[in-house]
Amino acid sequence: MKITLNKTEYKNVYVPNDDSYLFLDALKEEIQYFPQNAIVVEMGCGSGILIGNVSKLLQEQNNRALMCVGIDINYDACIASSRIMQENQIYFDCINSNGFEGLALDKSGIDIFIFNPPYVPTEDEEVERCKKYFKEKQQLFAQAYANNLRGQDLIEEVAKVNLIDCSYSGGKDGMEVTWKILEKVTKLMNANGIIYLFVIQDNPINEIIAFFKAKGFEGYILKKQQKYNEIQLILKFVYNK
Amino acid sequence: MRLLVHNLLMCNKCDKNNYPLKIEVNKSVIMELEFKKDAILKLIPKLDFEVLSNTVRELGFKQFPKQIPPNVDQDLVFLKDLHRVLFETHIMDGQLTCPNPSCKRNYPITNGIPNMILTEDEQ
Ligand SMILES: C[S@@+](CC[C@H](N)C(=O)[O-])C[C@H]1O[C@@H](n2cnc3c(N)ncnc32)[C@H](O)[C@@H]1O
Ligand SMILES: [Zn+2]
Image (tube, rainbow over all chains, first blue to last red; front, top):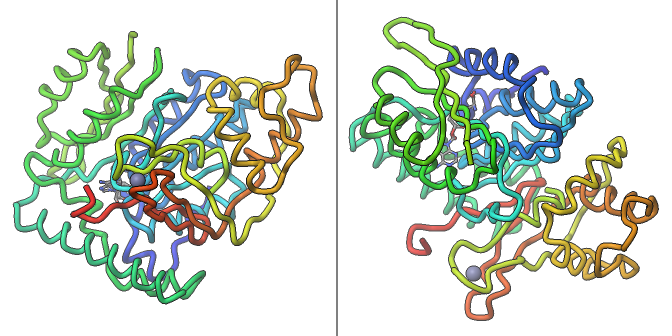
């Protein structure tokens, strides 16, 4: 799968980095364990590198996912990832949402959940700045939409507010967004469902593992690597319902 | 956005009468995808079929059945219709509206992307 970001997207959308590639390596090895006709959901799909490759690999194994849904808070990322999927003829739907807001996944449940969150611990100031941009972007969208901007014009207008900080800024312990998402997703997983999560050593890894254990998930460490002074890990949690 | 996704969306401002969202389509396109009987059969129990059927019929496909046909695994005509509706029809522009009469919040679909984000005071 080829990721093609244009100049604006290159600034506004999370460009696949060491974390994305480590995650992708893990997923490539894991695909064999995915159930037939799975419902695959990725939170914070960014460019779509993870869910796009999963969808493509499943397709090649003649085990097309029933649905591959990517969710991102950043409209620019939603636009970029959907375009990239179309260019690569990959089967995918993208929703612009803040976490699971607006999603009714209770009936279908989730079989595979992928999450490379904003994981960097940041000060309150930075979290506030993110929230401010997020609000501004939403206002800009509403305004542009009301002014009947559509298509490329709308995309360009909305891109004037850059949400890239929201792709890494994780607040306290780097867990502000992550805890909210994990709390919700554990309620949506189907029996034998699998959650894949990226973390670094600054995140409270033992606490995360204990959290999952209490909810009936068994945890594994799939990958570990050091990049500069960051230790990166891919965790796997299987729901023994 | 495909109708498959519509089946998964609700209004998060309300906690009741918030599903399914009414849908209005300004522009849709068909993108072909290989038909797989297996996949579509497995999907059926995961859908809210009544919601799907109402939506499809509201959008003008009046012959679409209200209930899942009895011998569904033999009914290729139906399965192919379902495949077209769920997997191949992409709504590029339109809007979703909360069915709750005291809310009626609109969620735009632009460039194929539904925007479900609420403002701070709506949460
Ligand atoms: C570290 S990036 C990962 C991007 C991509 N999955 C990858 O691995 O390259 C985190 C992504 O999460 C998105 N994000 C952050 N907060 C979010 C939220 N509350 N809801 C949905 N997406 C969010 C960001 O916009 C960003 O695209
Ligand atoms: Zn509502």
